[in-house]
Image 1 (spheres, rainbow, N blue to C red):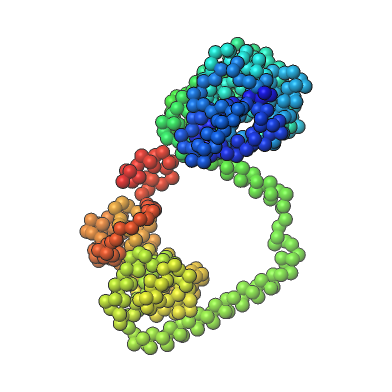
Image 2 (image 1 turned 90 degrees about the horizontal axis):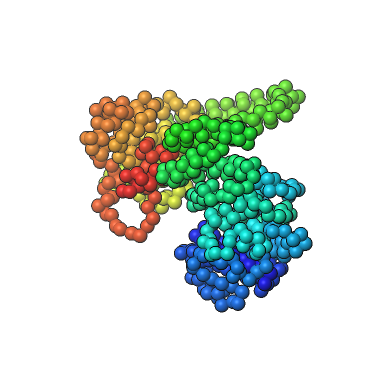
Length: 562
């Protein structure tokens, strides 16, 4: 048997079990020429994966076990490799690595994780590999069985991700011979999520606690710096600041504090880590919450610094002033003519629409006209239920609903009649002849014809005379200012659902007693016809204390629990 491949099947790689197994089966070394030991620790396997494992276990060269202990001397391969089902690589990888081992008679050879180092870079000595970072140190290896026995001893070893990474690191701290095969690449299809970050931090802690300190002082120091760099890399991610719980973040900061006690200020400064000095100072003083906020600010500052430099460099390379160009000067008359023609067209259109409105209003016998709306494609909130009530109980009244032609709710409104399509000529006309605008939001937010700014510019004087009513689309229990404030939105009437809510509106939004009516919300009537159905409920909220908080804090909130 040429190679013994040892792999842990875990929650972190179970989704790639099938593809990882295919990588091994397609190796040109020959799957029958490999011993495969699968240590099954995954609980969430699919039925197909369970069957696949059972069939694998029947093969003479495959062993499936649930116990994570392993005795190296019982492995049948000349060479040993620790494989992860997340790995993806060439079918020639193990064949080429075996050839390297046979050719150079070294203790181990290492392949190159494709994201870690350049293909043309030679890593001849242990210190060079350690200096290339954690990915280089922990790369996939093919290890001489005798060398692994020297490292692990003849007793059984308890395998875990952390222990395997520790083995990988220790190989560079002891006097083993090796060959780093730069052109033998493999990929790692891990998912960068909370689990990956937590596991990686756990691995770093384990390595720091168990690493071989008998190596040269320089190698150990360099290794600790690289582990600190990788730890800082993990902390400097949105995944850490926004998705990990406070307890998980605290555990990570504990690991960082331990490292800061092992690495000198000089080592930090000489390894491009001095930019994190404020973070390190906060962590040393156990200001963990402040440290998390600092990381967020640091990321934001870095982002905008990079953006500024990007555009600065662009404008340095492209200093051309468009207005000084010949083409700009030659086309100036055309642009002026175009601007003038647009203004003339708008003037004629304005006169046309105002004239049409002056004619149309008397034809309605000057009856009151109400326009009702919600969002332009929506008919499901208080606007729709108010309109429905009006049409069913007062069908002769001039009440119209504004909705877009392609709205999925159009059929509901069409049944009731008096539909006006959003931004149509009729919509623009009725904006001028109507007396009252009614909306579940505010009418100018959603129910003005598009383009809204252009329409307001032409008919602002007329629009200012309309009576506006806000039906609301929820119940106010907190101060939501500046939204809906009288100074900004200037509604003539706001509907509220209770006297308590009315007081909040008066106290926080600046409306008088006469400008707030307690009627209950129109859609409340529909609750009498409530029918239970199987559905997924999506629950948005305006709660400001939940704005931009991370996942872990959201899961602790009363809102989530309720």
